[in-house]
Image (cartoon, rainbow, N blue to C red):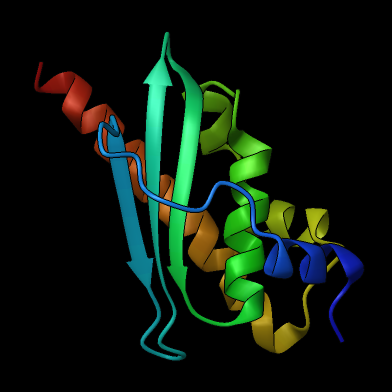
Length: 124
């Protein structure tokens, strides 16, 4: 059974879409379930000014992506880097044990996007 927050973020996901001028992109997927996630970050003064996601997967994956975007929008890169899959699951009011990997995917996509952002900054 999913919490009300999971159902809300699944049926009314926030920050869905692409950022064509993204400063960073993070992607991840699960061979286990077939879910894939792509996160786009727009960063200004080391702060996540905007974030969008595209997720193809189950309701828990979509809800986890949506919740993650709300959690990190406005945070600094370093603050966002400290967000864990457990933080995402907790903010959603919990996920069933078989769906906890969905919050892992969201956190992994964020870490990949942050890594992409940092590598782009070093190459400038």
